[in-house]
Amino acid sequence: MNGPVHLSDFKGKLVLIYFGYTHCPDICPTALALTTGALKQMSAAELAQVQTLFISIDPRRDTPERMAEYAGFFHPSIIGLTGSETQINDVARRFGAYYSILDGASADNYEVDHSSQTVLIDQQGQVKMAIRHGTPSEEVLKTIRQFL
Image (tube, rainbow, N blue to C red):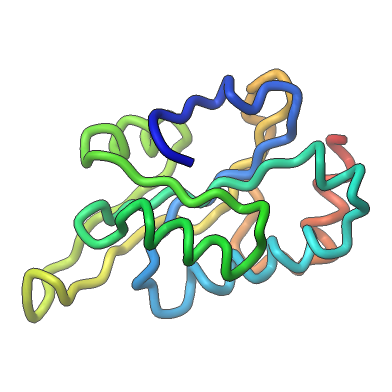
């Protein structure tokens, strides 16, 4: 997606939001893989009612193009989003996500400490719950179906 994105753009859909970054060595790929496992088990009709957003907490390295490619690697329906540090701070705060950029060996070589839950938002835009990191795909699917 290009341009500003608002939660209201997905009104009527169940939205899953995960805050992470593309250089994450293990937590983010694991979380996205578990969500993808659930998405792959859904029917086309169910999938049409769900939107997964992967929001970068590393705007210095995560360009819109990199986010699109990375998110698409996991599932074609996942939208990768980034923005300015101010925009990301605001969105992360609204959804209870935590992150902190750690000092690295260089300006381009660093890690980001971050929360790792997936926020589930209902069709009216209300936060319903956080899915814990490491929740198996079958449980993620069961949770999604509970809210469809």
